[in-house]
Length: 307
Image 1 (spheres, rainbow, N blue to C red):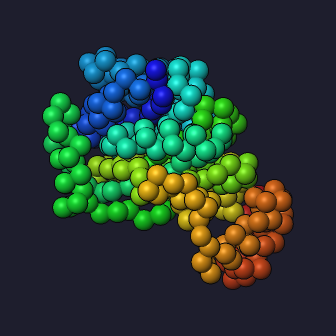
Image 2: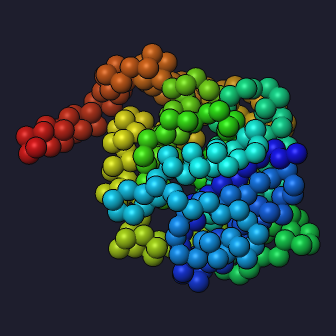
């Protein structure tokens, strides 16, 4: 029986290094076994051919914005329609997943009906094809221990959730900043547990450059990232892994302990996610960050006058 549908919207299979790491990711997900269904969504060059070669189900016809960038809303809807599993996972196409993920999902699902699972990644330089027909789990763990670097809590490369969650996603552009932060914000707004599973779910990011993006710029500098943040409700919805409500560790799901910093962060965001009031959320932000709030207010005034 299928437990999890992993879906992704890959970059074009054009750049040689991107080809290698995306093929590695798809082969890795298939190696997780019969409990995992893999869906590749999009119409970028090479996607259909590679999907056919690897025996992965390809779903074309994704909706795009005026710049031709696939929309997260369409990607998630297509995946839900094609999925046969009770749980879905959007995963970036450069990510490798270890089998401990499946045990974590079963454990968490036995305790919570609705949730969002996120976590930190391990960064590795991988430039060669990986074979997944041998002791690949042990080899990959050894490589992580020797050369891996645990990424900070500002990036999210996977989102695991029950299939009935996240049915109302805005038309974010994939591969641009802001939408992943909104996922955590939205789960908090819905009062779903946001579970940091870093200690129990091992994922590997295969490092790459950003030549595939317009002008080779980092994704957060692109105008589409600004549009994503606007559609998501503005800068107040920029949440990250530090805003998780629970930790999953040693097979146990526990409420995240609050130190001084996280306590005041919870106080700050309570009007936004607890009372679900954006005006009060902005006011709370201004109380906690008066200089930043004043700067944002000046920017808003200038844009309003120019408009």
